[in-house]
Image: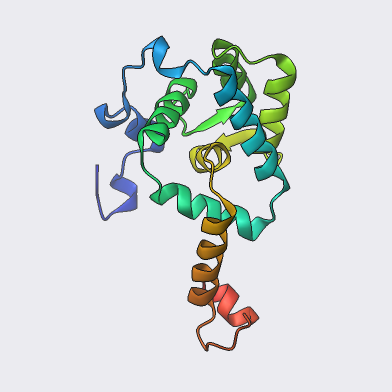
Length: 166
């Protein structure tokens, strides 16, 4: 799969067909009780209202945040991605949400929260970032760390050059 020459690399679709991404998902793996459903909707509403920097922090943290819930979300995403392009379109998303017993209004709310760019597709990182529950203290710490990483001259401000180079 790995090749230095980009012309000899396999496509994303071919990579997603690899055994690594093929997971046997049982129906009981993605049943959400009403408490989990309500928490998911609450998390998605909060995610929709956050600013771009905060969303970037959430995406960074979600890439580092590994536990059984993340693994379940990964399985759910991969099952929903029926064309294996690494993104969910509205139909793929709706199909899996119906299987989880979400109502049409709930599906619309969740879709609108996750498809913040309005491009009609949800990438895995967006999906995971929207579905994980990260408390404000951790978000503040992560923002501070990322800000410090960007502020190369320790001026407590980020100029355009620092921002561009980040």
